[in-house]
Length: 168
Ligand code: S3P
Image (cartoon, rainbow, N blue to C red; front, top):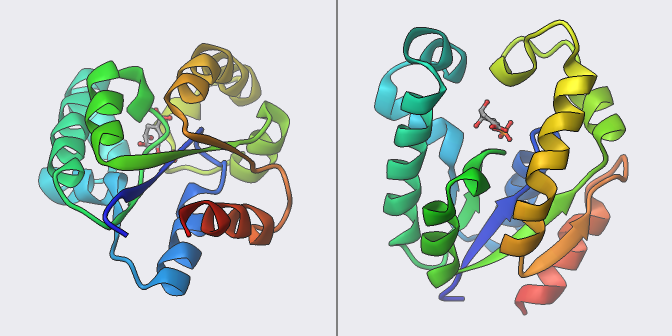
């Protein structure tokens, strides 16, 4: 497997859980864009947003993606916003198969409501914000994706099996 397996989709779509199981089942190295950003900044994502703002966060995100996209045969757990910058998508697609984990705003809301680590939904109307982001980003995820995977199930067995079947 020379190509990278890249997971994209909204926060709460199950990217990180699916990525971990894929890593266990395939033995391919796993890299989380969010974790690498935190390492680079010596701060949590919440702190980066609070101290430096989203534009700075997106710059770090882009740098991490360029570094990861240069590797081969790895699993990339992408943050929810990676598709907002078309350069991220272009560089990831060069050497990767992109899987869009597609979940509805309601499902996402149930999974992540009250999570204090997520700055983008820290406002008074998290479901409204999730719906808005979903509307904005759905076309971007769909366009970027090589495969769309239904991620609404409570368990991740099916998404994992579908991804494995497509990389054989
Ligand atoms: C973001 C999603 C988060 C994280 C940051 C911004 C987004 O990643 O990168 O809070 O813009 O949707 P997850 O999708 O891994 O939660």
